[in-house]
Image 1 (cartoon, rainbow, N blue to C red):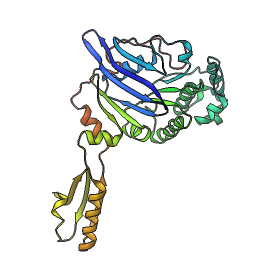
Image 2 (tube, rainbow, N blue to C red; image 1 turned 135 degrees about the vertical axis):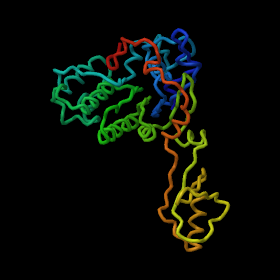
Image 3 (cartoon, one colour; image 1 turned 90 degrees about the horizontal axis):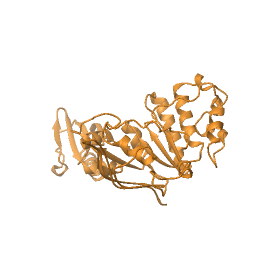
Image 4 (tube, rainbow, N blue to C red; image 1 turned 90 degrees about the vertical axis):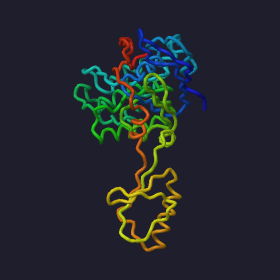
Amino acid sequence: MGTAIEVRDLRKTYGDFTAVDGIDLDVEEGEILAFLGPNGAGKTTTIEILEGYRPRDGGRVSVLGEDPATAPLSWRERIGIVLQESEPVPELTASESLTMQAAYYANPRDPAEVLGIVGLADSADQRTRKLSGGQKRRLDLALALVGNPDLVFLDEPTTGFDPSARRESWQMIDALRRLGSTVLLTTHYMDEAEYLADRIVVIAAGVIVARGTADDLARQVGAVTRISWRPTGSADVPAGLGVSRQGELAVIETDSVVPTLAELTGWAMGSGTDLADLQVARPTLEDVYLTLTSGRSEVGETDTGPASPSRPGQVPG
């Protein structure tokens, strides 16, 4: 496996404002990487530079072996883009939309196969104006996949979905891994990032503040797992476990969960003590993310830069 995206010392400014301040970023072939950050953190600027729709002020960028600023049309055929919002041609059916899109590519996937991948096989002949919001989002993904891309950019793909539709979308996105595609995902849903991503990168105020798995990020901020129960007996818990009282609960905070639980339950069984209402609460990615980005100002989704009118999302060019 090689590297699909390699970024070194990427910089971008808008007047006196620094949107991206010398970041390094790597995305391996075949992985799903979640690129997270508050509004104005530099996500949109970075993504548009990687897609070739915004110039950079400095640094080195390689995407699928090419510099996006000078890459040929053949390179653009190797990427797929799902924007936050798009609107398919309302008069076309889902099948017709994909067939038209496929004609832009030299080696597209079969439109019928792609409709099956995204769960729209039964709606192939439905005109897009009659598709539900969730079905239109599936079509957005299908339009990005029909070109048979090696790399897919997913920009907040489940915004506005109800919980059921979001879970279904996760299954579709996870299927991209099985297809061999590399995925760069942006999202404000931390559970989505934790479920889908092999690795997570957090950007704030134009700099990378953390990278790794969700557990790696938790360790970086010193987040610990909270073990709690409601004491019912009089036996003393071993002092080495560091038990504290919080109201009616006994609480242990630890980053060594399995050994701590083994010692705690062993003591309870040996002393005949009931660990009533025992709960093990690991730190959530949302908790860790808020710690990493706290105090960072939010200045706007486009990082104060001008919009990129040429960013089409689907059609190579």
